[in-house]
Image (cartoon, rainbow, N blue to C red; front, side, top):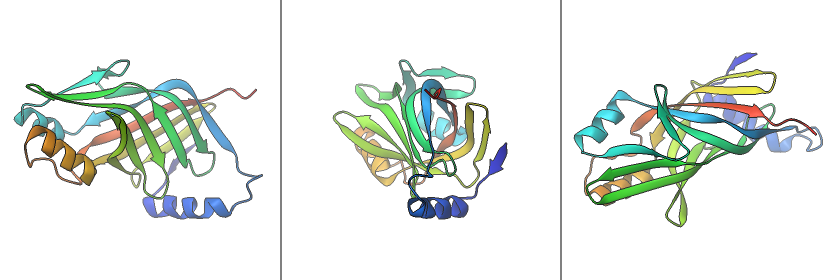
Amino acid sequence: MLRRLGLPTLVVLLALAPAADAAKKKTVKLAPKGATTLALSDGAAAALTSLGIAAAPLKPARAGDAGLAFPITAGKLDSKTYAGQIKHVGGISLTRGATRVELRNFIINVDKAPDLTARVGDARVSILDLDLSGAKISASGRKLTIAGVRATLTKGAADALNAAFETHAFKQGLELGTATVSGRAAKRR
């Protein structure tokens, strides 16, 4: 089944979800399989290169032809709206000279303001805003794919990267690329 949800539709569904009878709410638990892949936009890749910043995956994340893949460790999503959380392991490092910024253990939050948070040092911070208006969601058996999620830099992340790398190049809303979540529902016991 392939569905296309615009952001206004998703927001309405998420707003109505708490009003639904909790007994009727079904949760899809994700198995520790699959990955979220971020395909960097040409503009983001060119910007990092022009600044002399190297991006590299932190294990067990990996780089491939489709982009940077971050393994899914767990998740819980509403079976109708797909609101919830998806947890990952691994991350990405951004390095220039002696400056290294590590972003680890991503969590995708699908709620009224979808975002991706990362562990940076001892803090968890929102680094990407996620635009689901062009997302295509497909579910077949236990497999779930959410493709075409536009990922843009948050203001906090832009400010932190500008400070770390002594630049003004990072701006809120800078499109980093497109994310695809490929997960599998856990077997029911």
